[in-house]
Image (cartoon, rainbow over all chains, first blue to last red; front, side):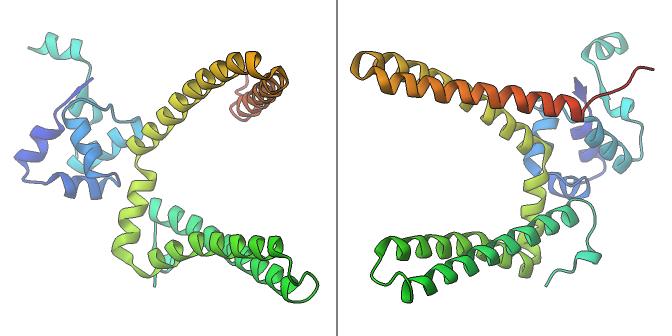
Length: 70
Length: 153
């Protein structure tokens, strides 16, 4: 599972702590998601997508999809 | 001080669990005081009764003081609530339980084998403990399965 949380966050000038507070998780969880060490649950993925005002599949996608898009 | 009706989401859930902890600590402290009263009246000079009283009071304070602190410190409360309900922390907690389950099984197996040579009776007792755990595990599994039962479409 891959994601563009880090890119989105940096583009919009949001810190990891701010995002973590908004989606009610710890900063460490956001770090783990960004580096791909932890896969967010469906609920958290929706919360993050809602925060960025985007669709879940626009932020989270399977690695195969990534290769196909490249 | 935090007000329950002003909170939402995980913070409300955590505030409720803190309230439960606080009630539990009050009950424990009152029980400790009750036992202490018994020590000074019926069971005077019985050190075991005094020890039970001290243990109950200590347990009550250990549970109650953090709950009180968090209710009056909003920043610490929010941080703690996030940590408590953080899904990665919960996932790590589940992994910890699984790992400790396997390590305990390994330690018990070694202990049963060693005790078989030293004192067979202890070995049998230990095996009984393992069997009881196994029975509890099966019952727990059936309860969880029943709770998660889904009907046919």
